[in-house]
Image 1 (spheres, rainbow, N blue to C red):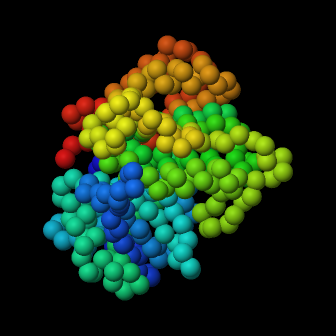
Image 2 (cartoon, rainbow, N blue to C red):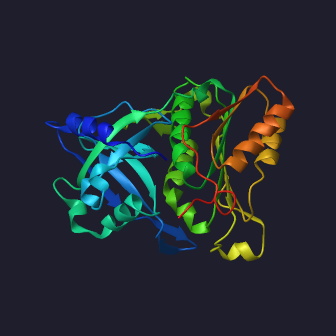
Length: 326
């Protein structure tokens, strides 16, 4: 992902002068697997308390500067997709997922253990530029397929939440949302495991929360409607579960299927398109191999009712599909 230059940074600082402080709290992630709590060493959640509420939309991203991270961080601004957002008391928060690499994300990762991570009103001083990002209007389609590899999941989660809200508000045509996500290591599922469960529970309980915490109950007309969200996970290495040695796939609850091999995006998309009719959109935030597979399939099918949309950033391809450089 690109970094903002010095001119953009000067503009950003000027915007924040005289305004209430924006705070970033770096929170560690624990992955619960087979009743074990496993601390993650490759990512953190960044909860940012904004100086004023935003009208956040799915698929938006921000540029983040955390001067307290040290090094050259004060002069750098890095883009992150907004994975989700919420309100707590009178404060409005957005949540980013930072995968630990080198430089800025390495320094931010270690801030989870530093005392100034809980400063005035909680958190380190942060500068935010944004939000940016185009509206993809996925809710105008009957079926939505979301493909992600690695950290690409951060760009897809907000679309799921928005689609569920619009569905139960009766403002979306969407009847089925299917997520396909591939990770390099099973522990990376912990990046968003709690959030995925939250979205599934919202779907099952027939209610969904808007960005400002308002509960939207399912109407009587929708009482018998089937659940919308279905999740397929693919782990290519770093297996942790006992199931990985005895089977290729295992069901985690009613609507999560975990497969211990790389995903075949072309096959998966073809199967979904053959099984479910109506207008379909395929949203991609994935490595180039996955993007090429899906685009190739759509070209071969030549169906005007199937559209492909890509988010602004895509994870790079490294050792194999879904891998990201260190």
